[in-house]
Amino acid sequence: MLGPNVKPIRLPMLNEAFHGSALVSGWGATTPAMVPEYPDTLRKVVLPLVEYEECIQLWYDVSHLAETNVCAGPEDGSKSSCSADSGGPLVTMNGTRVSDDPVLIGLVSWGPFPCATPWRPNIFTGVAHFIGWIEQHVQSG
Image (cartoon, rainbow, N blue to C red):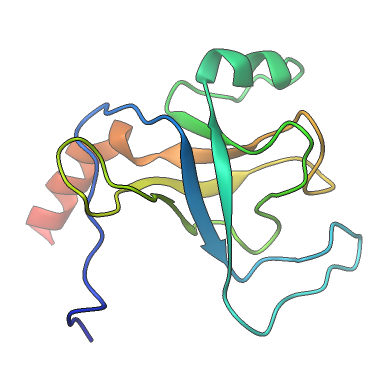
């Protein structure tokens, strides 16, 4: 139920770029193993955002990294989203120059196996690239 502590997340502006860090949350695996362990409570972690050009270099051996993706994760792989986090939110922590409210900048898409691999940031669908599609479907729905 919406209230003072629960409200809808703000969407980014079309093609808005983000820098710094972002928070990802989910119910995904907490161990990078063939038989993963899953938490009993919702988990969250702050990840540094990785510039797209650097991300392409780190994922040099894949062809499906798109300009509509957002990359996030520390170089040492110490923090990561993981299996069963897919579709979960990547959110700015300090808002933007437009608003102090958090902004939904990405949705967990894919990443390395095992999770939390050094030099392999997680890949998110960049919400800012799909604002037109979202608005069209929200209005028609």
